[in-house]
Length: 188
Image (tube, rainbow, N blue to C red):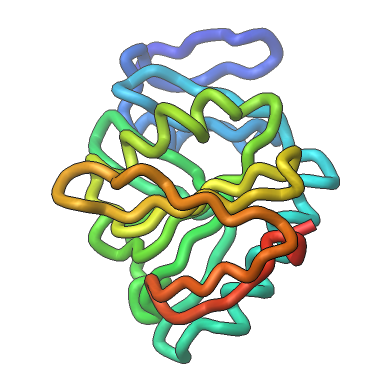
């Protein structure tokens, strides 16, 4: 196997990378994702991002039925050349105990990203396209700098409909993947 030296970290495999290559990458604090075999690397999250993530998990976990589980930063294998690590997912509890190293698209009911400066273009453009193509029924995009605002995308055929924006100070009453009501201000 060929290795490439990206500074202090040596990554196994050869571009274009596969999800199997990604499974061999070191646990060095970076978040490695793939888009069509191209490597996407994000730095560790800020404290504000982590607080928003924790609050989103609490809201979802509190509303979820017992057969569902809310998890953070699960490897999501959209294809052999596409692998993402969304900030949070909702999936069936039994699928969470699969022996597969990554979640597959047919197990994900909701996928969510919290927009940061380092990931804004991916979270607003690339990931909605990739998640829709993989068949993920619902995508949440949380924009902390907008008050925060929660953008909810729902799958319609092979693409997401334009998102519905829910601004801080109003209660969003959502039905998918289960009924949940929240004021996006709860996320900060």
